[in-house]
Image (cartoon, rainbow, N blue to C red; front, side, top):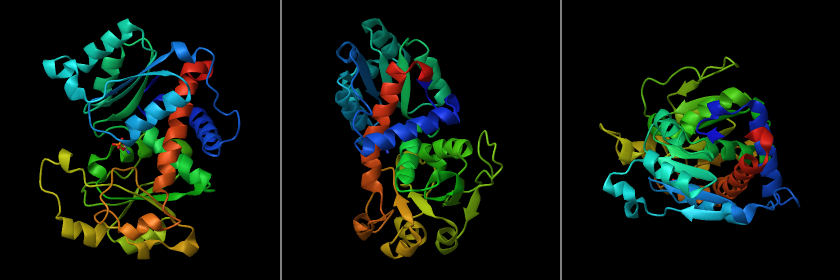
Length: 308
Ligand code: CP
């Protein structure tokens, strides 16, 4: 299977992956066992953009499943710097006999799909350009469901730089599959009013003020300003803090309001440091769920014929 965007999967698959990940998170015995052939299988981690959480959680997930890991590590030490393309790197890994490739690259989903076509094994998108980060969206929602959220009734607010966010892009698709509502509070202009592939016909709410946005939402996902992707001017840090920073006073304990952030984050800019200490801050839970979700996906793709 080529899991490059959430357009590639069904609602039934997503619901099953979330259920298995939550069982693994809770350490329900026997949820994800390493399979007999594990020592013969190889997972390639090809990250051509920086990453901490995604790369290491895929590596940890693979090792927990007793699989062999081929971690490209710093792409600057690979033949990419000599002009080799991702497609040719994947052709090479295919000849070696790797079974699953996890890729991160600054390219469109179509470009990644074209490269992935030369690889006979499974491919998982670990983040492509500004278009897709499917495993992040899945683990975000698994984290909320694990806290008791009835996701199809949820209103999730995104605060920040949605224009450059592949996490936001994948949530637009996942929300259409699972039925949760989306709101945005963002410096970006010209927000699309609808979600891709939407069967639920729910418009995206676009808020101008944090107070009204938080009044509407029952959880929020913070995003960082992605300065490395900005071509034009972006608002100053001072203005960002004033309009978009999440403060501990914004956490409404009585409302069971949860705050998430996919990371990487800049404490003090996207949120006040005290937010990290609040019980309704789920950032650490997301990281832990990241390992469970990636274990689930690797196991499902390698061993479950229905997911292949
Ligand atoms: N959320 C996320 O993709 O983090 P990394 O860039 O650290 O992998």
